[in-house]
Image 1 (cartoon, helix red, strand yellow):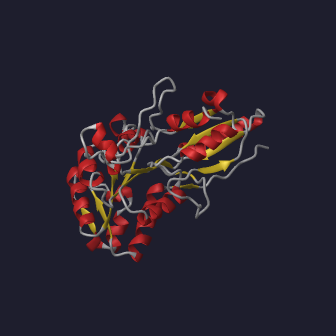
Image 2 (cartoon, one colour):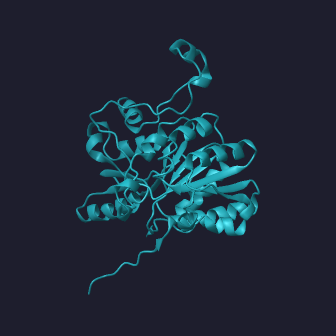
Image 3 (cartoon, helix red, strand yellow):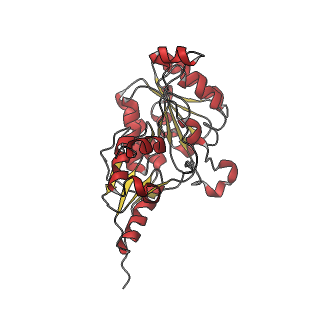
Length: 312
């Protein structure tokens, strides 16, 4: 007889709606903006309960970001939601200059990220959004693995001042976590301890990483599985520790794998490219060095790991 494993499937979009309803009941500053996709994104549930705090701007995504920036300046906490093909796809300029540059408390939540929206075709398979959002200073970039983690991370974003980009997937996905996982923004979650190889994943690929770990276990290979739900700021210290634990510097390239649906990964033969966390406010290096407000820090995994492990 074949053994059957029951897998609980749930929707990140449902979790988003539940989190917003909960937050909205506790904080009158919470407002939600949509762009004619609110029924699909499930934020229409927020509109039904709090119609005076929901704004449907139509298919005008760039304008929606500007409105959100204005609401944030007025003391609100706006959550902007639509498909990732449209935000950030159609409004990178507005996100960069109207939200991130002044470091406003705007939370951008996109659905249908990566290739999870396969049936909608290549025009909607947004694989460049994470790379673009990570490159913009001040923005935190979050990619939840399932519905329970989506709800927790949405709530955490509300408690964390500043702009966010939170990327969700379209289909219902297997639940990796219990109903209330202990997740913190900026800190990875080790799901399974291992000694031979590390698999670091985010988004819908976390469950795939767990399944890969089970397959490797049958081959007597011990895999450490890590959910890297926060891609910026990256928890480089923990990842360095995982690297040392599962192989050290001599075998690093063969011992660590990073996977996600549609997240561009850096080629190991390319020099690491810094990911800025702050805006430069001066034009010359000397001025920039003299002004601590204009410092830029690298948040790229290979650069951090290589420098740390070279000393080990």
